Length: 304
Image 1 (tube, rainbow, N blue to C red):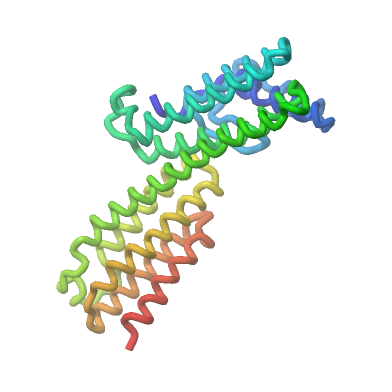
Image 2 (image 1 turned 180 degrees about the horizontal axis):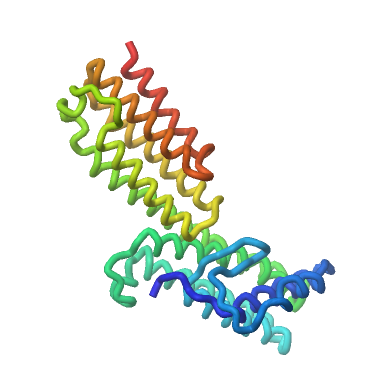
């Protein structure tokens, strides 16, 4: 099932061990890191998140299996360095398989059949994006662990192989982010389909219109789901794309309106409600600023 995993301590130790080896090779404070991160934790501890260089990740069981396999590959190259090229190939291949299968299950909705999910939810999409970011953050550490086992003339192979993987994962992650934009686009279309009905704009009211209340509530629901899985920076990236779509779509809908004074007042109240409500969400104060385009549009379109 594509849900948050309960994480055995051994998986955090796999990551900590990889980081320890990376720091050791770089002649950094590897012993202090090992004391600080590995020794104090009880073996039977169950974690909610994995940590990579103080960055926290919720993950799924499939990612834990991937970590186990990769750690076995890294251990193999330490014992049989002559197989460095083969182990690099196996590592890259398993990462590519993980990426493609994740895409099939989540973006391709294969999990509906395989895992008997009723639908692919925003939380499923967020978890997939988080797992991809976990691997992206892990790749420089993997490269460092493999680096010393490659002769100088083959180090370029190490860089090019992982660069292809990074491109695949980044493209996939961007497609997941775009999926959130598409979801919100569909919701805007649903709530704005009757926007040109003249009766919507005839009655004076101090409250926002129903369509805008619904858009704000749907956006807050997405924010809550993403906040339960993703870090602040990733949430800001996603909402910057969502808000850019808001500008384009809402301007298209607003352009078709023919409003008198009461309608103009209500529309401006709607725009202010959108900006103020979403700007009050933690971490989105700066991200929401581009929505001021809607105010600029209103002034140019409706102000006498």
